[in-house]
Amino acid sequence: MADARLKFAILERAMRGLVAVHAAGLSHCRPFLRDMTVDADDTLHFLDLEENPTVRMSLADAQARDVWLLLSSCTEFCEEPYQDLNHLLNIYFSE
Image 1 (tube, helix red, strand yellow):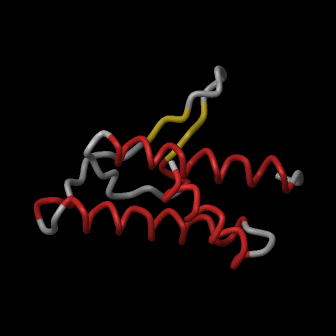
Image 2 (cartoon, rainbow, N blue to C red):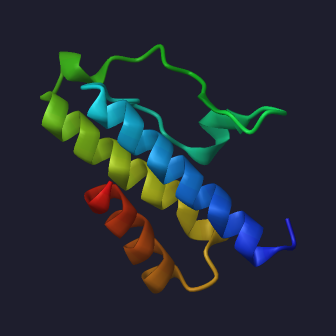
Image 3 (cartoon, one colour):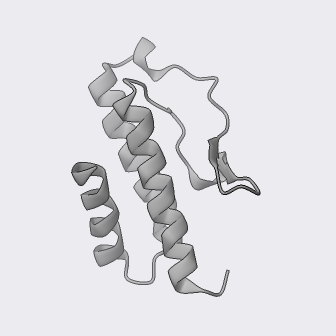
C-alpha cells in the first residue's frame, strides 16, 4: 500500500478493534494484522480465535500480550516506528 496515511489509518483501526475486544472482557490471543480483515462495508473482522490464552495466564496478562503482539505486528508498516507505535499505544489507553 503506497498511501502512508491510509496505511496508518488501518493500524489505528486495528488498535481500536482490539480495544473493543478488551472492553468486552476478552482477549484475542493472536492479534496480528494478518489475522484481521476488513470487508466491503468497512467492518473489521478478527480471524483465528481458536486459542484461549487465559488457560495459562490471567485475562490482564493475556490482554497485555495482545497489545504487545499487535504493536509488534504493526512495526513493519510504520514510517516512524517510535512515534507511530507510541501513538497506537496512546489510542489503546485513551479509548
